[in-house]
Length: 233
Image (tube, helix red, strand yellow):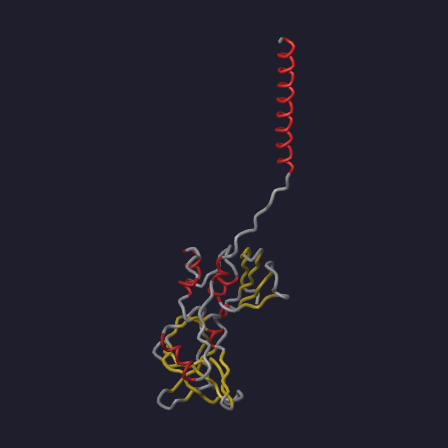
C-alpha cells in the first residue's frame, strides 16, 4: 500500500509539472505573436454623396429654381449683368465672381448668345445686392446640351452635408479663414480655388490660393493644414 501511494504521488507531481510547463509555453507563445494593427477609420467625408440634378435640356435645368443652391468652387466662376426686360446678358462687363459656398436663389435659366464663345450659353439668373445677374451653367449647340452645373453647385446645404465637421471649423469657413488642422475641402470652402505646386496628388503638398486678391500659400501634411503663409502668389 505504501509503495502504491508513493507511485500515485509521483505520477501526480509529474502531471502538475507538465501542466505548469504547458501554461508557461502558452504564455510565451502568446507574447511572441505579432500584433495585428487595425486600419484607421475612413474619413467621414468619404461617405458624403451630394445629390445631382443631371439636367439634359432647358426644362430640366430649371429644377435649379426649386431650392437654394450653393457654390462648390469659390472665385472660379464669373457672373455678368442681366437685363430681364431685354433678356440680354452683358458679357462685355464682368460683374464679379461667385464666392465659396455662396448661397444663391436661381430665378430663371435662359439661353444667351456670347460672341466670344461657340454656340450659346445656358445661364442661371439670380439676384445679388439688388441687381440681376447671370452665370453660365452649360452650353447648347445644334440642339445638343452640355451642362456642368452639377460640378459647380450643391443643391443641398453644405452645412448639413458636412455637419460632422466641428463647430470651430465651420466658424472659420464662414469667416473666410484658414486654421491648422483643416483639410483641403474645408480650406476650399473657406477661400476658394487653389493651384497645387507640382502634381498635387500627395497628402503632403503646398497649394497657392488667390483668395480674391489676398494670396495664401498653404502647406498640407497628411492631408491637414500645417502652415499658412501670406503674399506668396
